[in-house]
Image (cartoon, rainbow, N blue to C red; front, top):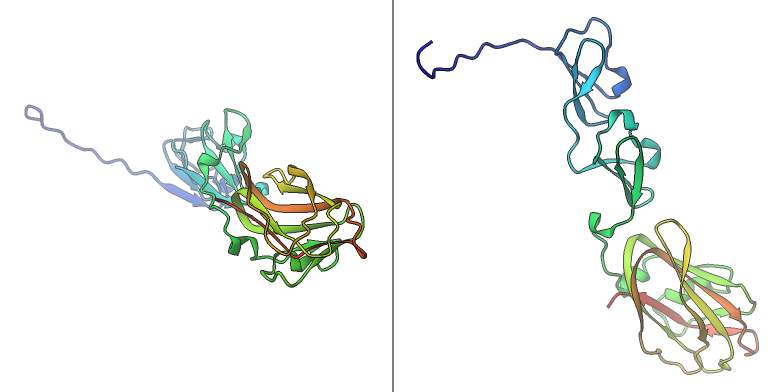
Length: 240
């Protein structure tokens, strides 16, 4: 060897690849053999007794449902797993997965009127589908306390304002509560005691602190004394 010359002496290593980490072989494996498992997205080195992780999967592990989250045995601290059926992330903190709801990990679009109308309203009120059908001539009707209408979004979305269209004939003594569905599938109040609107026009947009939601619910808490119950032709919950 002359001066700073470097000579590479190659070493042959076998590389095993399995869909599941549990299926990587543990017999007839030589020291320093390598193994890759699809379910963890990681590369392992055989130390003579066990497979030792030598890489962690970068960024998100987009394996889908919460049921598919990797065992912490096969994960490194700081690894991130996107729980697609819950729309949140879980971070491996060294022996446990901890759920995080920091929206900086995901991009959530701002809700538009078209997004709000993408799925027909449903619920116990009469004609629930008419509350977001973009037709102010149709009416959702609330004739009992506790009747509600829900509107689901296709994915988590940002909202920060609402308005509704009223109807001539409403007395104005009806009351409603508007809620949003959070990422834990729990309804949280946006505003309570919304009075029934007595004119055939839109209320002004009312703002509230931005939230990320999977859907909204409007519930009758006091029935308007109009014959047959209070009418809400249209509701709109969007982002500025």
